[in-house]
Length: 210
Image 1 (cartoon, rainbow, N blue to C red):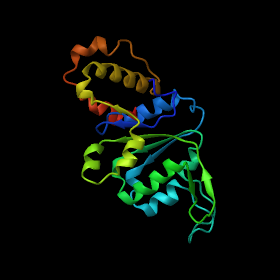
Image 2 (cartoon, rainbow, N blue to C red):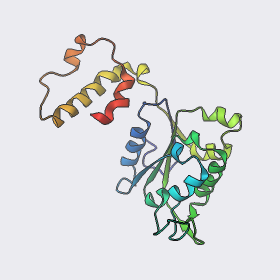
Image 3 (cartoon, rainbow, N blue to C red):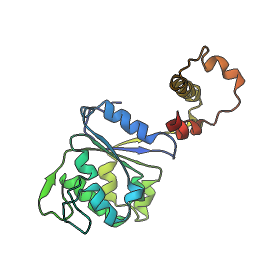
Image 4 (cartoon, helix red, strand yellow):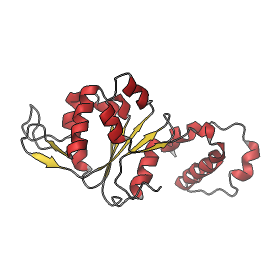
């Protein structure tokens, strides 16, 4: 991946289950930030701006009732490394404004604090939505879109990459066999004539169980 050694923002586009986070992790591992943190953020879970600030931008002790100690946010945890903003298209407009400011200024203020905190992070975002259409209908900010879409990577579904299915299946079967303390004497490709149509998309969707 030519983009990996750079610090350019990357937007990974693809359907659910195509392995967008795997692509993001591969970029991180091949970058100069590979020895630092890779922090994944599910933007759909932080959609309300009241959730975005304390979870992403850190909290100062005493900022609100129950804030008994300072808590590092996702951006601060990713400092020097990579932050992966999954489901970026789910953020509402007010939260997009807050995120855009952090990306532009490379700094933020902790919730309840008054001093700015500088950050150095590489941003990789992912979406299964058509963000260009979202920009056109006014549900996604164009300035945030262009800041994230510096280097777009489209991940096609496995139904369009049938040659990859057996390779991926063999990888996960070998991985599962090692966990069970066994080995495979014959490769999946040698047994491929036993298989009917393979639901390739299910391989990525269920790989966490392998």
